[in-house]
Amino acid sequence: MLSSRSINRSMFWRIIRRLLGANRGRLFVILLALGAGAAVTAALLNLQVDAKRRLTTEFRALGANVIVAPRDVTSSNPATLDEAVLNKIVEGPHVSAVAFLYLIGDAYSYDSKNPTHVVIAGEQDGSSVEVSSVQPASAIGSISRFETNCTFGTKVATEMHLQLNDRLFLRSQGREETCHVTIIHTTGGPEDTQISLRLDAAQRLAALPGRISLVQISVPGTPQAINSYIASLSQKLPDADVHGIRQFTEAEAQIYNRISGLLTATVAVVLILTALCVMAAMTNVAMERKNDVGLMKAIGGATRRVLRLFLAEAALLGLAGGVLGATTGMLLSIWLGKAVFGVAARPRLIVYPVAVALTILVAIAGAYPLRRLASIRPASVFRGE
Image (tube, rainbow, N blue to C red; front, top):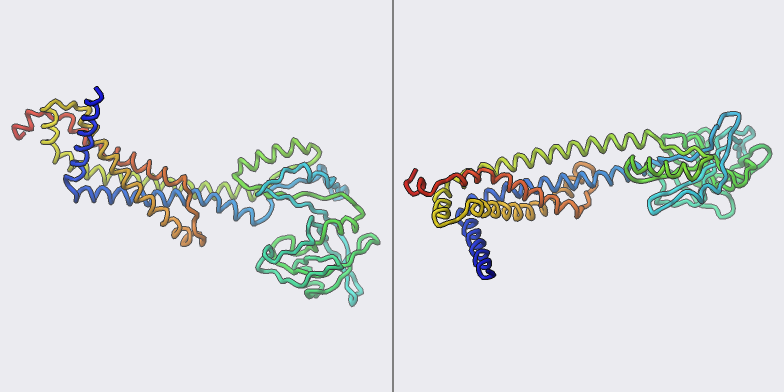
């Protein structure tokens, strides 16, 4: 029994080799169609996967997308939170939380007699100035070791005629802090009208030790993951209002869904066109192999076994075309990422086996015309009909 199976297996692969080498020109055409389809499929799928990471990174660069604030805040009741809430916020390698305390104060210099009313934002770790994290539209001065370093929005700096490394005084309800102008930046947002400094300095000015106005959290992931994080954090902080910034989460979801839908539709069209090309080539193959199939059936070959030979041939062609095409497609996606998004796409290993598997399925589907060989009668073939 074992020797019979071994002989059948050996004969099976011998016939496969003969079939693959029977018409090398048509074999090359089929491999070219499958390889081209696999290349485009792998490139688009890699861009689709990388676009999700790219969008998440770009949206996180815009700032926080989750806010933790006190409940029932009004202009007459500027409620605050205990700074201890930071200990309940789960931080990870990509989740960051920063506490803020906002107050209204006066800013003036030695030469200025009339103080300017300004919004002062105390920021956690606001004293650490990293040049790599400063926006290109920012001017950077020296860092003072003896005074509080402050970041000024461009509108405040213009109104007060400030220069880098100037020394100012911030005052609120009789309390005063010295401020060293370290950065003047432009964000296009409300930060342009604010003065930012360390959180502990703002707490001294406001006479609110250990209190904060809100916490801004940057959470990566899909809108579903962000909503899940918000729900989990709301249970840990029942006395606080935890909500997401809808403009960020909804815009990210809409953009990704559009990009993903467009790329998915393009992949589907490419696979259909590839299957049609393979099907056209396989139709000619089926016409050429009538005599071979008639001979196989005449010597006792079962129809199912004959079809299995041709399906195995199509699967091997799909595997070869998929492996070569997917490799080319991964390289192509890097170039497309640079051309379309300005940044090279990162190759994703999960895309490679998916592209190869889809190519094999397309090759098998394209071999549908070979099913016509199952209805061939050996007597009709030998009579030349």
